[in-house]
Length: 413
Image (tube, rainbow, N blue to C red; front, side, top):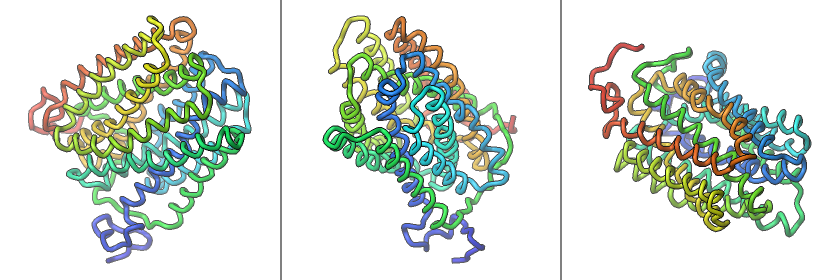
């Protein structure tokens, strides 16, 4: 194998030891990131209520601030002019880990917002670059299966964290600071290992390092926008509901997350196989149809007084639909020019987070007057997403991006 300094062409990595190959690197980072981020989320609602007295208004503002770096993910395009994507992913993971470790040191509104901004910057830039690397490094034919297994690996890593929280939080009277330090420190150590232990991998298609918007990707952009809006409502208000309305404690809400993880570990590989067999169109239609029902039932909890069992069940089902999120990735992989993947990942991440910047804050005010209205709004978003999913062709490819397009590639717009 030819070694070009510390850079190795992707097609020459087969002779590397298995642990130093590109896919192994993707698995390793995808296991480290959720240990920090998911643990932060598991403790967040209890932490801000116990230590800072948050209501729906403050939690809405927190998540709006958290999503600003996602909205600014387009800055990745400028950074990859000077920094390799692989290095940027590791540095972003390091920032996420360090910021997570320090979270409990700032138990005030201003402190929480500041440390959240830093951790979010690491998380969103990592996610943007990681998605780009996945689509560049994994073959199209294998992508649904491999992405499904990567998702399951991330869930497995987080599973260990959640089991430890459930078993030790109450038994050993753990503090928020201890758990944040351990989970964030783990992600930071993995990031340092990735920076030092792996060569730089060179994909066969150099990425465009400038802002691009292509007219033929319009459906992908629209689906990303709606997915961002729907995800924010779930992430911000579903967990907050379990703590505020039903009084879940840290070990109880973490146990609910634990059930989600087990479900994801079981279903993510199966979902990957299903997307590979039935295609992105059917997967997205199934996902959004289910979300219409789930969010409508969420609203019913407030309007009809349905209880905690239904709420917890819906929370798990809702979270399981996230296992199909990679169907949107593989749809884009099939329609995209290979050199467009990195810049479009950044643009799409910005579009995905456009609504995330203002929706949590605005819906936080709606929450304090009509919590059920927040979830009815989410159901309406799911209906629109379903309509867009119907426009995805059964066999998407370059030049056949929607059911209206013909298999003739127009010049870049």
